[in-house]
Length: 205
Image (cartoon, rainbow, N blue to C red; front, side, top):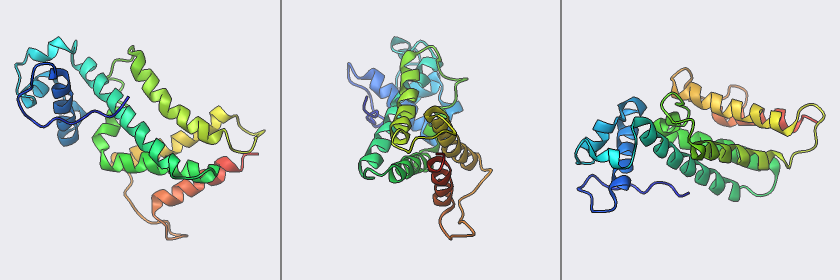
């Protein structure tokens, strides 16, 4: 799945209403946040009748779910690009994974927040589940190359790694933490956090 192509605010042509609606939803999401994305707001942004979205989406949950699937695909592409440029060493690949997630979240905070708003998404849509698992599997492939461990399984290592990366992102986006520098090394805080993550995951032998 490729990221959603952005369509500028214009009258839609026959056959591209769904894409126009998703593009309008993303503009609202980026500008105003998840809660501002309603069916009526999207129709207004796309310059169509309020009833028009019903031709493609059963309701707000279906609209947001389709949007989230596209965001997951966009994040996956960013991770793939970072991994492809990182070489073969597991520590470089793990660092690249973390940085890709960090940088995506800093650029697109509301898109990142949407991915975890399960109260607003259709949990029964198998495509949404598959999109989230695809991120998990990328981290699995990275950690599969680490040295065998008797202290934790690969799944436990994946959960630990993702918990640290996602937890730091969430704290930053919620304003609990701010960007800073590590007092011991002078590195950016996020880089120092990744060093801690690498140290822990790669020494579980």
